[in-house]
Length: 288
Image (cartoon, rainbow, N blue to C red; front, side, top):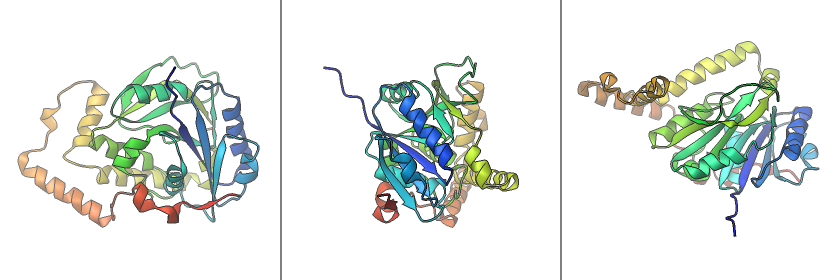
């Protein structure tokens, strides 16, 4: 008797564009896929998701927030509500294609020590990119990203205190996972159409998005700086070589670097957000 495939909890955040959410859910309904999944929709203050989700039996829960709590906070609510062995973060402005989930689940299940597997985001269904297979990355896009529950329990949830309302939260999480020995992969065999940040562009001006990208990106780098480990891994992945001892910090500078990183963590209140600390108080109001 074949082993039962693990359940995946798909988390979709929506912020008030019902036509976009409707397209996303319709694609989930139509696409061929052999992996069992449930969908949790987190509505950040629009109160429109419940009616859109109602016709779809695979939507197990709709969480309604009174206002826009930001991406990381809402995603954490989805983590708390999900029952799956894995979680899949899916932007509401994405459309899934056939077997969008199967290959990423296979990658995750078949390799020990993987924290996350990102899908390839395409402009349309006729995307002719020839890349296939998986490759190791420093991070992957949170718009289409499979995560391991086990890794989330060990690394912690997304840092909503430092990366709200949006940008760099998934990069920060991937870097934190890497520090604990996990690997991050992109799977080019899992292809998902992305409608060019439709939702974000309607919520924020170009100037606001640029400022958030720069400030959160810089903060993410500083908060994950530790003896140049991130830089060394980036160079290893970029140049595909094994030894970077020439950029190791001199012994005299290692302690000050560690102290500086500790100061940054204290300054930002960098206590890990866990399943236990996030707690029932943050789960939100379930849609009836």
